[in-house]
Length: 415
Figure (spheres, rainbow, N blue to C red):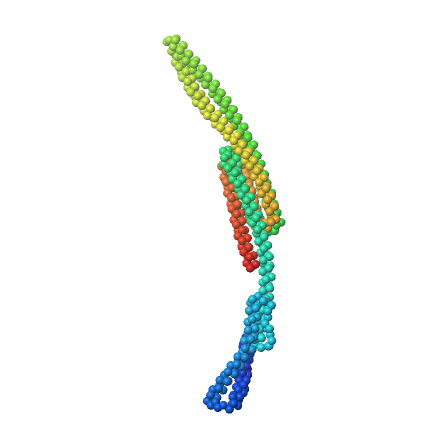
């Protein structure tokens, strides 16, 4: 097709040159004839004049031919191209004659039609993309707001867990072994109904776990009360031991006095009472040793009684702290209910994220062996909450970045 176009153009050009040469010869001869009719002798200058006239006439004819056959159509084509480039997509090249340049104009008109169709398609696609981008941006704004709300709720939960941990650290008695696991799972984009069902199911499971924790704390309170009662009974028995020691001490002192009196009477009896005096002295020494021993027992009993009293006070304090922890669990239960309610209310607007929270599995042990384990579990639980809060903050930041990128995309399509 391309070779045929140039061959046709070359044939037309050669034909035009032949026509120009023919016209040039005719016009030049006519001009020379007019000059000769003046009967002016030109001599050598006549030949030069003929050549000059031929050149001038040929130049004029070629200029006219190029102007009408080439330059004028090309100027028309260039003008239409400039108008099309300026945004006037309805402009087309006017075809007056069927020649090679008109074929070029037809091809350009076809190209203009194709470009106009592509531009219309691009405008339609641009409008669709802008609408989708604005919808995505709106969803991201809702998601950002709800993520911020969840982050604040998790921050409140972390604060309450820290307060509970402080209460465990202050407790010097044995409580229960607590294992707190908080797991947050973000799934891919799912429907609102599936998200709601999943969160509702896991929330009910979490409520059951908290009820189990509350029941375990109630058992611990009962055991702590029982231990407190035993400590009080031990205190009463220690006081009875002190009474017995006092009685023994009184008997030893009376024995010592009797031995002293017997020794005095034996001394008065002289030689006859020496054997009795020896026995009296031994009895007195035994009485003194008994007094010393009973004093040691009394001191030890006092120490035991003091320790028992301290343990009674500590047991009472532990019981109060366990009761406080029970109240804290109940408060945490109510807080969890509020958080769950808030999450359930927000699920209709969070179409891309699901939050799954499995909360608290507990087991209890004896008071004396469980306190360190419970404290460690509480610390682990607090660390889990902080990590989850950090993850939510990271998700919030990523959502903000995604929203910014979406805004940039919308602005780019608008411009």
